Length: 240
Image (tube, rainbow, N blue to C red; front, side):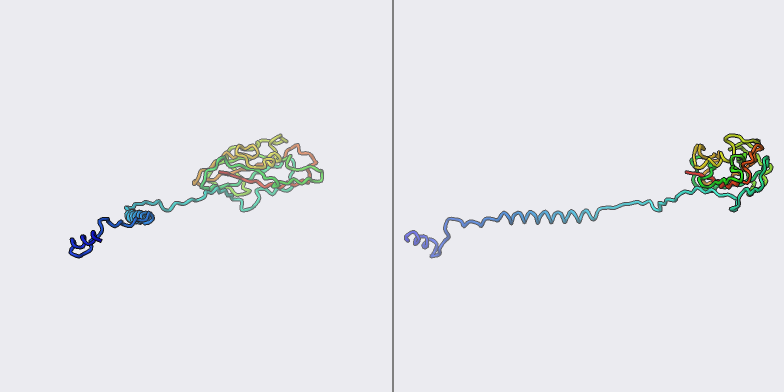
């Protein structure tokens, strides 16, 4: 009490604070972490705003298109057979021409091929039990030219290259008869199971080739062929 009175007198009757300083309250670690996170978030916002304002340049290549090519072969037969020959006898002969045209946009990978697809040839035996195709000498020629030869035309004056058979054959000749031609029944780039025309048209260049077909019934045809009837469908094919 005496000490307290002395203190009051020195201070003019006012009470003075104790010499010990009041401690500041300790700051929570969580509050510090939140402050740091808020600062990082604020910094990220500043960076985002800066990035979205960056310079931009671009270029483009428009109008890319892809068109499928076409292989196009046509002929001038008007859906009419080249041959319709009744009453054949040994030694009878004839010729017919047909023009095949090309207007494709893709160059074929091999020459145009000729063949008789399976099922596209029939040989009905006659009264003697024999067929017709083994006894008909058959040859095929091809020529390039501007003349248009129609189905069944005489083809006179046409000079070309023989691609099957022999126009001079008169008797049964192995490998050169109509039956041998009809045995060529499927496309082959090398012409093993088909007959190669040797004609490879070019992409985008219209062209035509004339084909002349010649027949002659062999002079040694047996009587067993009497009354027989053969029907043949010929196909031209090109592939890319």
